[in-house]
Image 1 (tube, helix red, strand yellow):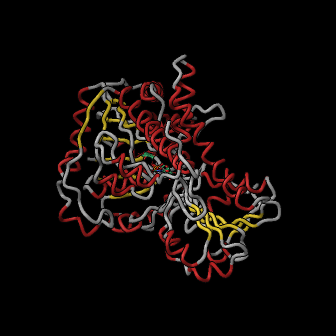
Image 2 (cartoon, protein in one colour):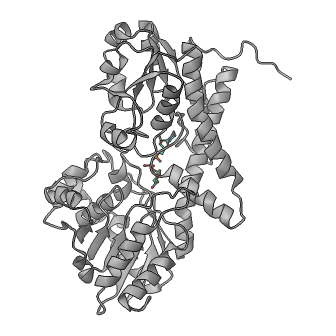
Image 3 (cartoon, rainbow, N blue to C red):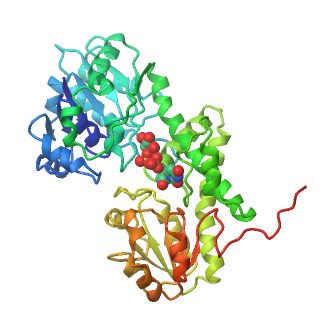
Length: 469
Ligand code: UDX
C-alpha cells in the first residue's frame, strides 16, 4: 500500500519506519525540515534504540521523508501522528491535528478512497472533528471519498520498535466497513508475522521474537479513542498504587519488591508496572490523565480513582524530597547529585519529567544541584532553563563533593560505576535509589549509607514493633 505518516516525532517516525519495513511504500511527512533532512540522511529524528539502523536501511527504498503535502494525493492510508500537548486547563491542544487535517483536505485525491488514521492520542470525538475539517477543506464526502478511523498507539519510548513490531494488540476503531477492510489489509502481515523471518537481521529489538501473535481488535471509533485514555490512566493508577504500598512497606518494615513479586504472581494482577519510582511522569501519563480528568469534569462524571492517582503521584515526588531532607537535616548549602533526568531509561525525552519537579523543590530549600543523564541533558536544559543546576559529563562528576546522590532514572550505565571512587569523592556517601535498582549489598559493603524506596535497609528498618490488633 501507499502509506503517509504525518509527524516524525516519537509516534510518526516509528510507525512510518515500521510500515516501510513491512514493505509498504511509506512517506513520513513533517513541516520540520531539520527532522526530514535527518531521515533522508539515514538518521533518526529521535533517540530510540534501533531506529537509526532501520531508517538507514530502508530510506530511499520503501521509506521516504518529505515536507511536501502533495504526497497525500497518492496515499491509500494517511496516519496522523502529530503532537497533542496539554493546554493550561489540562485539555489536549488539537492545533497540530487541525493543521494536519487541513493539509490532508487540500491534497486529497477525489478519484480514490483514502483512509485517514488518528494515531496520536486524541480526545474522544476527534475523528469526527478531523472528518469535518477534511470535508470542508476538500469538498469531498466522508465515507465515500475518505474515512477517518482511530488506531491508538501503545508504544513505550525506549521499546518502541519492540512494541510496533510485536504488539499485544492492535486496536482499530472504524465506523465505515470499507475503512475497516483497508486497515485489516494494511496490518495483515504484521498480525500474521509474514515477512519477519527474512528481515530478522534488520531488527535490533527484540532479541527473541515472542510466540504469541497480536490480537487484532475492531471496534467503533469512539471506543477506540477511549481505549487509549482508559489504558494509560489505568497504568498510572497501577504505578501510584504500588508507590503507595511502597510508602507503607517502608513504615512497616516490609519489602515492596517482594510484595510486588507476590502480587504479580496472580494472573489477574500481572507482574508488569509494579516497579517503584519517584512517581510516573513523561510525555504521556501526565497529559493523558489531565485530559481525561478535564473531560470527565466537563461532563459531570468525576473520575475519583484517576484523580487520586494523580494526587498520589505528586506525593511521591514530595516523598523523595522529604527523604533527602530527613537524611541531610538542612538542605541549605548542601549539594545533591541527580542521576537521570529522563522519565525512564533508553530515551532522550525529558518532557514533564519528575526530575524537574524534584530538582525545583531541592533548589527552593537551598540545595545546590548537579545533574547527569546519558541522553536527556540537552532536552532537559532546553525545557528547564529556569533551573540553576550544574550539568555534568558523567555520574562521577556528579558524585564529587556531593552530600547525596539520588538515582531517579535507572539507566544501565549507573549500575556499573566505579563505586569505590564515588565513595571517596563524595562529601557524605549517601545514596537514595528511587528505583531500587542499584546493588544494595555491594554499596553497603563499601560503606555507603544506602536507601531505597519501600525496602528495608541499614538506613531504614521500619517500625520497631508492628502491633497486632
Ligand atoms: C506510555 C504507555 O506505556 C504506552 O502504551 C503509550 O503509548 C504511551 O505512554 P511511555 O510514556 O513511553 O509509554 O512510558 P512507560 O514505559 O509506560 O512509563 C511511564 C512512566 O511510568 C515512566 O516515568 C516510568 O518510569 C514509570 N513507571 C513505569 C514506573 O514508575 N513504574 C513501573 O512499573 C512502570
